[in-house]
View 1 (cartoon, rainbow, N blue to C red):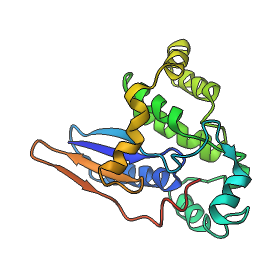
View 2: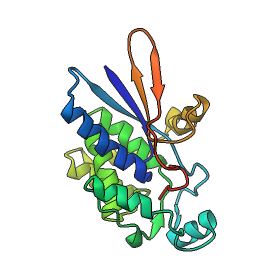
View 3: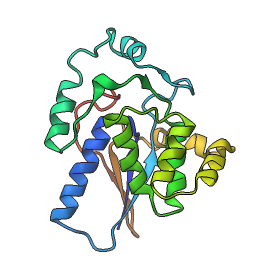
Length: 201
């Protein structure tokens, strides 16, 4: 079986969902399971350089704290062993390059590792995952070639720039969506989560 997960590395519910899926698979393993990660951008109109975090919150929520929006996320995260550090975030990035890096990592069978690492450095370490050097250093930490990674990220994205919007055209309106692929048909389902788009980090 192949499961495709439609996700954005700045979606906290996607991080939580990854933990819950891992726990479920540990309890009920599936033989020959393959997991792939597909792109979705919560903020497709975000400037390429990203945006100051406080300004982002003001524009999104009308204040600089996001009200109580993140309380449920923090609580759910702690339940899965994730200590979200929202207060330490300085910028909200454009995730196009991060999605390209996830795609590139698939060529070296490191896609799941890369997704996990992106979640960690964004939500826990508060690094800017829209910055090329941050992504290159992350790839190097996972054993990927630095220059090849930098060259790939600097190159023409080609069809990759359209992949996040492809999910929307397929009827996916929020990340944390899973697709199961089989030889007979494609079955899509979205696990329940509290208003994922509104809680985007």
